[in-house]
Image 1 (tube, one colour):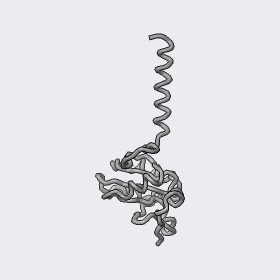
Image 2 (spheres, one colour):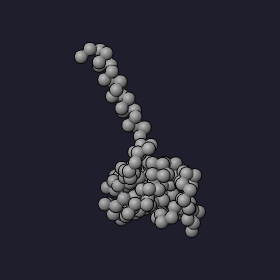
Image 3 (cartoon, one colour):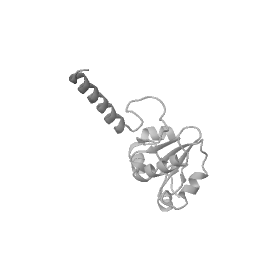
Image 4 (cartoon, helix red, strand yellow):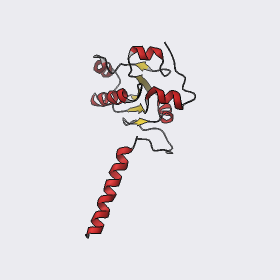
Length: 144
């Protein structure tokens, strides 16, 4: 193998790695249902995922934040609570979960902990609830 061929091969592999690292799990313009693989997706894909049969929507913000407004049908499991792991352990390991928070930081943490606990069918909302209210016109926020 000559040096040019080797260099081109290495550059190709590096480009593929960089592109895959930047992926959110749902390519722009990709048709089909969102993949529940622990990645965070835009509000449109999240809305589609959350609307799926048997999907549980989980708001991982504090109870106070939840009371101020949350996505319709969401349940509140506060990721910062010392009982988060116990609450996750009670969830169906075969279930699918759409997880969100305020900005996507806590939902990433929650999904990592859920995956460790054996819940692998998860998807997160990129940008958190602010992205939902800003992008999806039909995304009414429930209160109370």
